[in-house]
Structures are given as structure tokens and as C-alpha cells.
Length: 131
Image 1: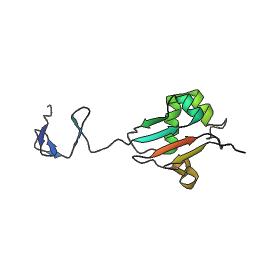
Image 2: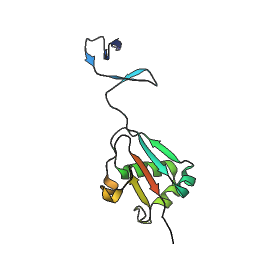
Image 3: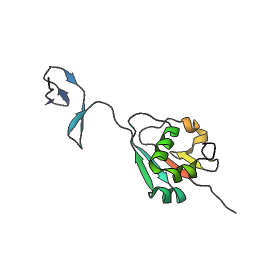
Image 4: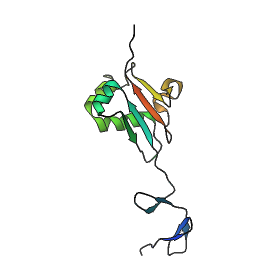
């Protein structure tokens, strides 16, 4: 039996007399469940900007993910050159790469196991030299 959606104020109900709290997805104009997709911004600098072809990317995972999982997604998206730049031969993030979450170094947080939240901004910096 197909479900017919009827709008009753801010709630949607089915023809089965049940009421569900659903938000309206503006892009498709269809009701969605109460889950919101996360939006995480990743900023790239210097060489990574060249590799990705972007200053930043917006990632929208369907669930809470860790920084490690985000880097894995980015590696799949941007390929071998990205992986070679970010990881050493043992598969660990290169020690000279600096990663910040909302302006804080990941070493001050939970490292690669830091759980990312809605609106987080991840910045991946290359080695910094000076003299």
C-alpha cells in the first residue's frame, strides 16, 4: 500500500493516521527523516591545493566520522598523488604535515581518532620552513 503524505502544520502524516516528525528537504521538496547530514569543510594549501585543484572541499558524511575516516575518504576521492603526499611508506600521516580542526592542532585533541562535528573546519598544512 502506497503512503500518501499530507502536510499538517509542521508535521507530516500518512494516510495510516500516524504522525512523524519530518523535516522538508528544500532541494527535493520531499520529507526526510530527522537525521541531518553533517557538513565538514576541508581547506587545502600549497601542494595539496594543486593536487586537488581546489582551495577547499565540502564533505557531507551521512554519519559521525573520525578525522582518520575523513582522510581515507579524501584519499579515495583525490587518488595516488594525494595519498603519496599525505602518508609515509608505512601508511601513517607524515610527521611534517600539520592538521588543524577549528584552528586546534590534532595533537591537542584525540589525534586521528577525533570525531568530527557539524561545521568543523579541517585545515591541512604543508611543512613550514623558515630561517
